[in-house]
Length: 471
Image 1 (cartoon, rainbow, N blue to C red):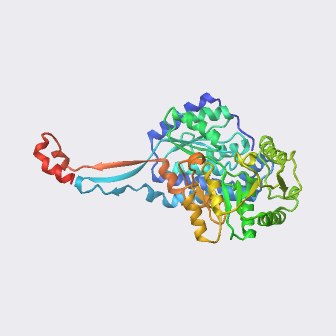
Image 2 (image 1 turned 90 degrees about the vertical axis):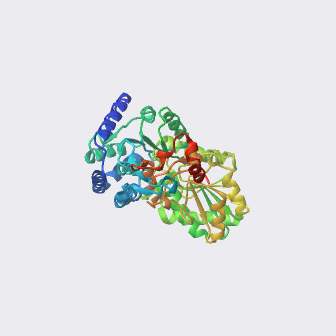
Image 3 (image 1 turned 30 degrees about the horizontal axis):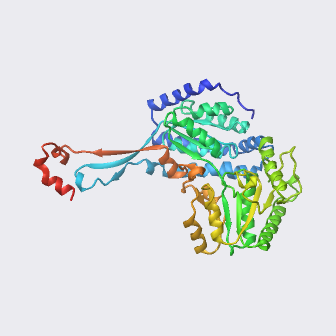
């Protein structure tokens, strides 16, 4: 599918106005929301092979199986979760008003906000566009989507898919470069979801501040794996390999570095186990259909600069496969051993198949290292000792945690997904997203006769009643 022509930036505000006008004229009820989600699911399911081809074309090569799991399954299961629970979430909920306000009756309703903006990234271009979009639709909103300019064929696929499912006054798509994205972020949305880097997230937040637009920011950071002294290294290596090499490490919650409790011999045993995983999974990378390429030349050069910096510092750099092809953007799984904080691989999110490994003397040292950094989007403790895991959980804070594995918490529809501090703001998935993209409207129903009728001067007449209320 060829990329569509980008609209001029001055078309953005009129499109938003059209979406808002249509929403105000006919706010979606349960039947429309449920039908919209069903039609979106059916259309995506039918076009999964086309989706995988579009993503692969954008990356140069991407495993179709990874696309089916990460950009197909995740969206389909999220839509299923939303549809099954939508009626219950939409029901008004009785809230106790307390004896002081009897006989008043209180309730809480979930009302749609209006038009939700979604700025999606390039690394999972369908997943991270359609899950927030489907959630906004479930909450009764209209949606304006801005896919990444770095994956133009995926953006064209999304535009075609959404045009098949929705009228253009319910869902619209804006494509374009960073200039268009900046103008998009500055629109007066009723809610804005952004997924991307912390640096760009700060710019989005500043742009949204002009309209006091509420935000869900899904950012990144350096997500650590803590390997405790009791953790079996073969199992650890297998699960680190999946988390780090899936999509060639271009995942916001990929393990960004490893803190291994133990000595050099234990570290070398982990290196050997990771080497065995790379060989068993991929063999010759040039022939490995399941190993994804780096999305563009700029990202490849950024990753290569990390290795150049590590070698210049005299660090041990271990390539786990001999093939490294800049022309094809084939970046081999690579380890960097014992980097200091001055190495660039320890200063910024890696977002690629480079894994630094640092040995630490104790679990307390590992926890201290995590707490010395900004709070991560994900944290991965590895231990079969429940007390050690609880110690990590109680003394650190991250956006989400998977114990003895990586990535998997993202796929649990009922768990909120979001960061904390520099790794994000707010959360979505399941009920958390439905609530974030709704106004939780408090309503108090007062009968014809109420105690508040007595609350008027002269207060001396009701001083005993006031004394009873404040007892």
